[in-house]
Image 1: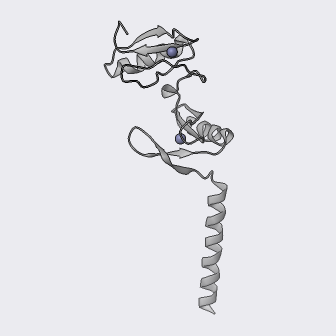
Image 2: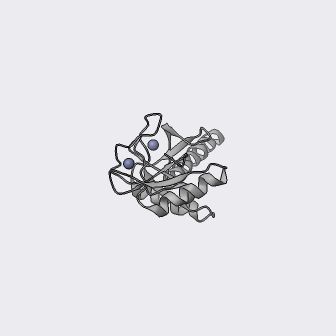
Image 3: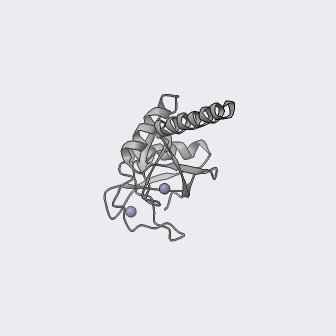
Length: 143
Ligand SMILES: [Zn+2]
Ligand SMILES: [Zn+2]
């Protein structure tokens, strides 16, 4: 009898735990995308879900934004400071290593990146993309 009660109690606790987990916003860790520190990023299947999580984290002080990931096709969140409005369509410009260059949608976004990199002592120059609307950054003044 005592055993039975104990068991029931255990099962009830298990159910409560499961309920708590499903109430909590479940985040999956990405197996393809990692932070700069090498930690897997949390992935969200919808923009709405990522947005909600971003809003939640933002309340703790760091303003977060949700973004669509072109690597895994899902959504991640990152601090607004590190989020840049990059032009979707891109262009065919490449850097000296042959990698396609990041195209910033407007000059203000490019300037934010210059400031951010400047904090780590990297001097960048902004120039207008020769083939489409947008801006690129280069580390040499003569590109
Ligand atoms: Zn991803
Ligand atoms: Zn370009």
